[in-house]
Length: 604
Image (cartoon, rainbow, N blue to C red; front, side, top):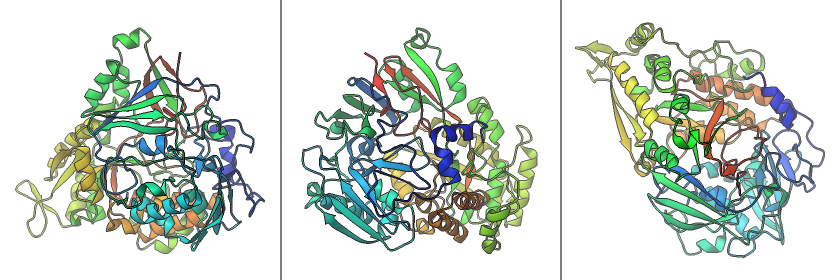
């Protein structure tokens, strides 16, 4: 944890939320905002979000670069692959999230939310001025249809909350109420973040089939042009209803945002160097030092910036698909983790600059301390599952460190574990009792140059154990199809986590993801202990209990050895053309979706 982390939290008011205050005494009365714990940091009469510039000039054009392609403009369904920007640019939610707090929402389409102390229901009252891009009003019918349709026909991440809705009803000309059948304090916030679509657009159409018809939303932009494989252009709606809301002041400042697609990272970077793109995000610290010595940088036409953040590390690395019997044994997974020489890979690709991800909630107050045993409330939460937990969950688990380039010590330990699990070397090949060789595929996308390089180093190390690993690269559309249906042995895996973990944890690690396609549980985690820790997160009103449950969940996941972790960065590295600017203050979560280009503006 960085020493300035709690200073940052205190400055933003987030420390109050993490350490806990009594719940606000306004239950059953309409409020303009809501927080998962304690009270929202901003007063009802706030002028703008603290990381936005309400005086930001309007106009101009911002061009983003992206790898891959798309074949749909509907991002809410399992079928197809849609541009990531459809939702944030064109579709709004009932409430909007502040990136400067762990989890607080402020009125957007809804002017208020009403709930009780138990949060057994949530009632939203729409703003009378809320309009879709075609000028039609946003109605309670649209809200109920959107929540139900997404929950039944949309991606699995929407289904969890919908199943906990006992009744959805219109309670007034502009109000809608959801009554819940399950104790879950996050539900009012989750429904507050549901995209609201225009019901009439989809009458007589199959919502769950991919296509190039963009949803009609109420957001600041509309899709202007789109060519799969090339670009998508978003044009500012001159009649956008929400431009004067305090939540939106200083946001969405450009007249046009365009996303250009490229087949490789190299092509994307060259496009930025050539002036086609407005900004470039560099994830490799070594390249940050060496690749940005070109004329535009030397002339000051391009600015380099490092944006700090206070968010958890999350998890990134090579995920095992434990649905495959090959990876069902934790000893096999531990052996393959031992074989991955992180220090060599990090030095080769990043100049050794990146720290390794030590756990899912690392770099935050919610994570475990590597190598130390569980204590107190954390140990008590895990105790009922003692016989089901992987080694290290209670005793303490710490990732291995390589003893040089050859990594001999770890490879010896790996071989011993593989032998325990029934694998032996036969004529240089690792085989099981039936003589079947240990072979698997590492599935990646074509543009993932760093992960491909890391996988190549890994493949060579695995050969020393008699293991054959083959790297397969696909385009984005093919890759999505295979990962949606869990048709892989091992693949690149990344899940970002917040300071307020909740229902999304079920989607990431819940047992239904073992068989249900389209969840984000790619490793196929099936752990009653993980499910119990998630349930504890959702039920508590006590931030201390939330923290204990989060650490307990972290221990279950980390010791489960579901991923070969790679690295994370404590800063985001952005290069951008000096024609653009952003506010001096950056939010608690740093440079995340919702910050660029939303808070940026063109310098005239």
